[in-house]
Length: 166
Image 1 (spheres, helix red, strand yellow):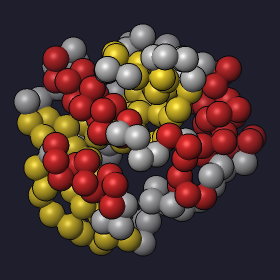
Image 2: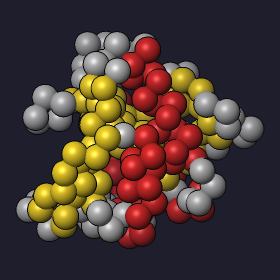
Image 3: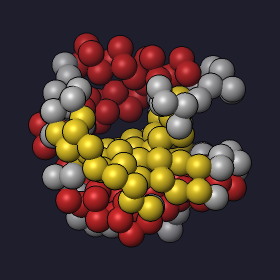
Image 4: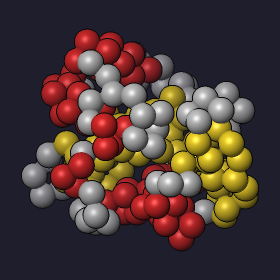
């Protein structure tokens, strides 16, 4: 277990998560604001195995974990804390569609912020979000400091950039 919130637990992913990980990564609605591409079972298997390899190095800066319900241990999504190409600690999350609109995004984001600052001792975290992803924008607007909007050429969208300092 990495951390808990009121209703959620965050733990390391395992190969047993593949079916639900694939269901999430292969859902057009879930992937709409993260590049829009869905992935095949084989691609998701490779991605999951790659994520699991990062766990072997305790000093790595690429953490992607499973979000589960405390009440049932059901996998409902993933949350990430990664050092990006700009040397920033970036957070992100994805939820299976059936768990949308229940407050889990805000709850797990707040839990990750606390974990990043208190446990990992990170001084500053950032987040990027497509401005059309209204739910995530609302969560970030309520928690982070909005810095700017810019055109994201790779994803062909307008991204909003946020920072939060400890």
